[in-house]
Image (tube, rainbow, N blue to C red; front, top):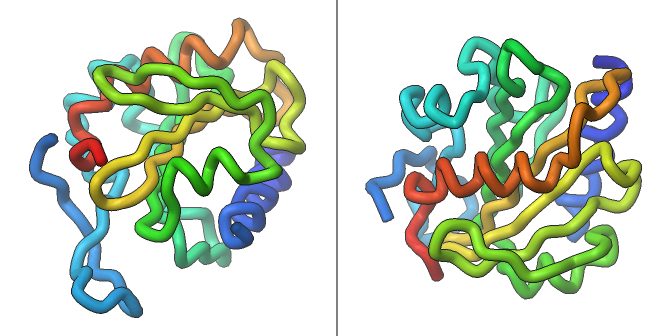
Length: 178
């Protein structure tokens, strides 16, 4: 767990710099926008169907950390093989074009997640093989998905196929495509 906090703080710092009904939360400072997609609003049954551990859900960024531009929800990998976290982040402020231009996103490649066009990348500062990320444009903003190794554990396989599988499993619960 100790190795995870520097990565969370790095992601939080980087983020600050730079088809179904959706449950949301009120957003201050965005005129005309009263709700924003909340990743933790994805139904428990959908999370369980992905194989993720519903009992190990983390809402937000952690105690004492605030990242106004992004909402976040994280689940632990399957209890039988829990070596990674799967996170969903959402921002009203960013687009896929912003993600493509972000210098902290390395090895960007186009991928499909369900019926949507997306990009897959590695976040600068995360060792190759320890994590994989993707971003999808929606009609409300940017969804960023991440698989990252739990601190101190060795990845059991390439995180990118795991990321794409979980992303495809929950894709229909994300805000409508852009």
